[in-house]
Image (cartoon, rainbow, N blue to C red):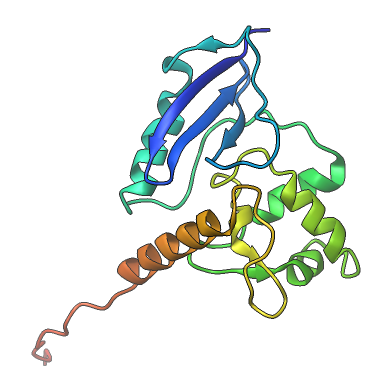
Length: 175
């Protein structure tokens, strides 16, 4: 099986994208504290990433907050459940680890949710940055809290722009 890699320039710095023939396997932000899943055998190419690149361009331009790209993620059943639940958190909003644990019907598993959150291989697309501490503090992000804060502020601005009201115009009632 062929694996692909591409370096995407973003406002946060260079993002490393990796993919298999089935879909995106990782999206790694700068300052990532773990080993980046790459190999010398990876094919460096832009073509396998055209869809995700276009969607990242729209995301960073403030035009879109949702992604529709094929993913090829490896994880335990529990991790996959958490990653699916992360995708239900709207942009501009946050949940605590405990709230996410309740959402997946595992109310006592907030630490396990945090661990699964930390193992998310496709940050931004599976928005693990939208999970915060129970007291509203920014906690645990593999690419650093500055990146997490930037992403949250970026999405809050997009959400505010999306929901800003236009001035009312005068409408005459009909008889």
